[in-house]
Image 1 (cartoon, rainbow, N blue to C red):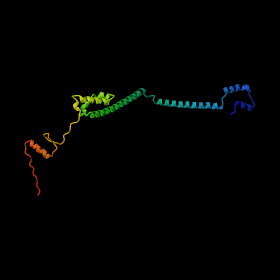
Image 2: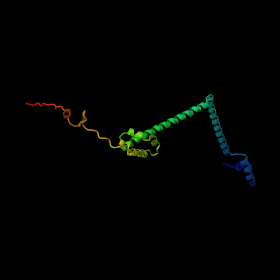
Image 3: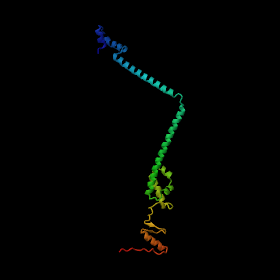
Length: 204
């Protein structure tokens, strides 16, 4: 690209060497190149586009605000706050239900491991609410169950289950693993009755 001095020389104009620096400074101070002009024009166009977009956005917001001009903002805020509080309470209730379920499962397993015979009776003797608040539920539940198993008035609630009777029972409390005929004979004997005569059929 030609500088200003070359262009002037083509038109028969020359600037003395000792004046060129001052002349060039004056030109740069008062005139801009086409490149500078284009850059400034682009920046101006961009700024105008942003301003137009901002005006359109403002108009849109004003239109939306106009739709709510008759709305009770204070009442609407109270409704929103109420909904937030309801959601918070429901979430807390749900968390409590989950915690209660986990604690019940822990307590049931702990009683089983401690060989508890009657889970309902044992639970009634525990301070359940205090144990629920414990940060070490498993250890504290185990310790509470151990204490109950060692106390005189509650240790009978722990231990191996009583063995179940095997066989048939009768009216006088006799347990037998024999046949019905044997049981009848024993009952008649106790009551002082003669045994029932049975006949055998012979073949032949």
